[in-house]
Image 1 (spheres, rainbow, N blue to C red):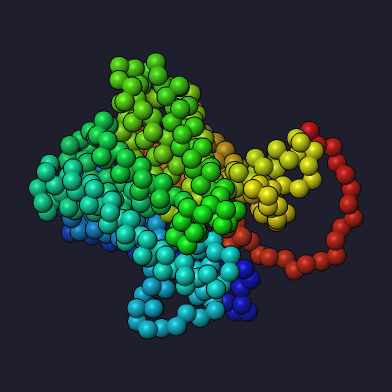
Image 2: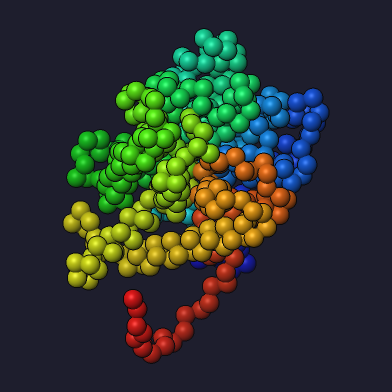
Length: 445
């Protein structure tokens, strides 16, 4: 989407908007009243926490419950909600509430924010996003309250239910379980079907993307009427969830899952197949993963969630398009498609560029981290992919990072939430079209 003369492009508007929210959140989290017993955070740590919340990542340098007061927790929850839905969604809702009409520029930015195809879709999608979010998060809070209220009492149980429902739906991974043990996430509920299944459902629904919601709402079980995007997203989500759980069980059956009964193994495997898709919760100690389980988790973090969703990663459809392109090339077909539909060449090029840029940033980030601190290779790559994919899972090295590496992860979380390709487009100066250069073939492979 091109910018108007004298105005910012939609990509730059989104990037600057998220930056403003992060800085405001960092200043609020530094307030003594936002911290327990006046234990304030430094600006760097507050900036790290605000970036992690706004970019719905979940990496923390201080345990959320131990560090922050109720006010600080509320600030974090607001940052998570705004970051998950996109600040433009919240701003446009406020404009509509005040009776203001949406201009062409506002619709253009919103269209870029939620990955809509047409300007006419913006208002419809806005209603689906706000209404669907309220319904899903509300249902999740009710289900989690069935567990937390009996354990913690009415007021605290309801607050915990709401906080974790929003955090799960927005794929943020922040938790308040530090009152049991700091940095424990959901490990105390490792065998609890209600908590596990509810959190998994919230994560998957948030990660499907708003365009899929609309298709499901309008077409129900009439799958043939779904758009190609929805068909690919739903198919890939089923494959990644079932396949990821099966592969995790296979990799960890003799290690992390040893000693568990089959039902417990299935529950843990399901959760650890869903959560790396940018959610950031864990029910087991990730530092104890085998090399195979760690690599699988990194791959799932790399893939991430769907476009226009609350999650990050390189995006499911991006990976699907690359795999479809590979399959077409191997089969000798010149066209790339699925479900009797042909993909646009620009989307194929964009997918290839997105994967290339993402891997370049991940490898560069991994090198910088390892060059400045001597962490094990798997732990370092785990941290980098977790930050860039806005996941929030960690093997435990986040708190040991130097100021330089904390700054490095801040940049990676920010780029990951905006979208690495969108970020580069926001920074780059678009060149005017010129005469095409002559074609010359090179040797590849």
